[in-house]
Length: 389
Image: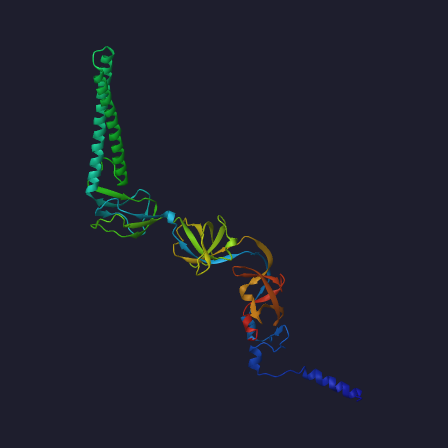
């Protein structure tokens, strides 16, 4: 049907005055919700006055060196068994005094407690007796040697019978054997004194129990006046905490990425934002059947004593890294069974773009596909824009 020029211009004027046709919604809903878009559209638009814009945090896609073979496992700090000592009594007796308390730092050889024991006097008496036996045996050897030389001289001039020579030779041999026995007994007595922490000349009724290693007193199970007859029961525990062990349970499918001597980064709940370098010193030879994990232990220096046994955290270990576009984990959203990011295309305009994750390292995700370095994406608040599935 033909339309006059006047009618055509009137129609154009009406379209320009009314604007494009779209469904009307209450003003409050239009200000708080994303503009409706077709389900197949990758675009989301927000009105300029939408309060949602202030809830969104935008960040850039950056290039980062990310680990490609990373192991992340929960971990716990433990005392190194090689730096732990349980103090035992060397003999039975009554505790006279205790010179340390829990938390005290001691050096190797410091006196921990003093014990009244009759065995102290017996041990010193035994050593003194062994000293006297050595002197007597040596004196006997000197006499036997002189007699032997005298009789041998007389026998050379046919002044004594052969029987006399045999007798002095036997006496000399017995004297030499007596010296050997007495010296061995004295050596054993001296060693017994050392095991008791005694030396000749000490008080004869007490034994000082000394610290076997340097460290801190972690446990104390003794008090003055107590009598202890069980020498197998530890009275206190001393630990050298200048280094501790990090014990992690690594899944068996990741254990191939861990080797002895390699470095592991440790993160502790007690010190958020800090990392501590540890060195792998042990990998268990068996798999835990219930959890399908393998225990890995790493030595962690602790010179200032900040790290305490039983602290919880996690370890990170990687062998290879690669540079790729990366975004915080909060920027990647899950939709329709895949991962997407919201790329900013302009003020209030965002593109829903599918991505493929190539690496994970800490709080960062490397994107193998879907985004380029320099693009800006929603890193916080993106769930407000996506419709529920």
